[in-house]
Image (cartoon, rainbow, N blue to C red; front, side, top):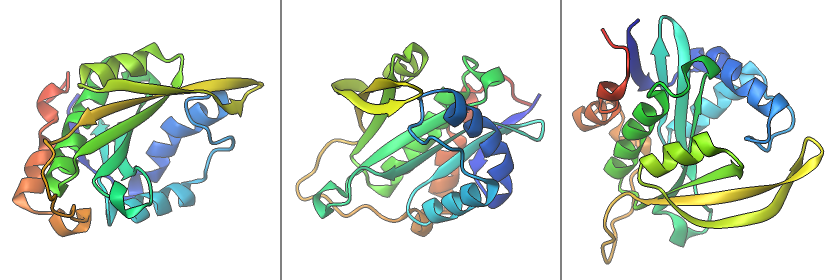
Length: 200
């Protein structure tokens, strides 16, 4: 089986939803309580790609996983920080897909000029904690009983990874649309492929 990492498109919405909908319905990993529909996923991809990367790992015409960045907070002084998320199909977990996607994603947000990446993980989730810590994320704190879903309260841990060394003053990060399609962007997207377990 060949597998690639590439930018998401609206055509990937169905495959992305196939991964995400069971997570929403059956777990507290996502705090959404009703799965979005295909059109909503397609719109989310479109809205994200102007400012931030959204990647998919695709193999044999199936989406194996996806990862994206989003704003950490809205206040201007937070503009150098992003939140990152990765989701992997149940049949492809523990295969290197998550690590490959994060490698590419973190290289892209570095290229954009972001300094910090944050990830929130509903606890307990040892697989996700293990992935993030293997990628260099460090626990910074836990929000206790911050969300209620599926009949119980849930803690959320927050992990941080420094993307680049702080500079004073920092240049503003650039929107993803400005670097999309450049050679540096293509190299960053491709950077995680070497970590995929099954390639051509």
